[in-house]
Length: 221
Image (cartoon, rainbow, N blue to C red; front, side, top):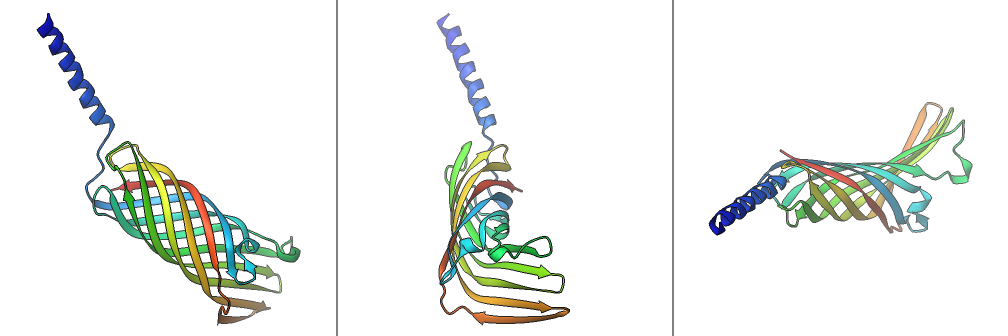
């Protein structure tokens, strides 16, 4: 009876071990990885000395596309493209039924992400990045309009967590802080069918920040 009981217990242990390993599919060792993020970004800091970033937009909805190479199950390096839809402020009530106001915030850069415990069901990660950002706003009237674009470099710090749903797909939350400094500004003035463009360096630069959080999904090929 004792031998039979040991055999039964051993069989149950093996079955449980096999089930647990099947429930935790291992990530691919290396290969192409693509990811997408959607979130909410809160502005802080200044576009230039005396002009706060909050005066441009109260918040923004960033869509981020990422693609690169997974060197091993933990380390990913690649490129990223961000396009954000800002909630523009309405300076002096300029935007109304006869005047349209629109804008965007865009960045293009590179990043590195390291996953801790990549073989677990939940894997926290941290990353850094570097890119070039440009933020634009245009006010258009039937007979003319004006606009401007700020440009400069930025650095990124980011953290998150991946919940592995299969050997190739992970989903989870992320948070990111970007620190940037606009160096140049482009101005646009349109009168009738004539548009005048100007570009100048910003004399009194300042640091601005976007604090973002949302959902990230990544797929490994």
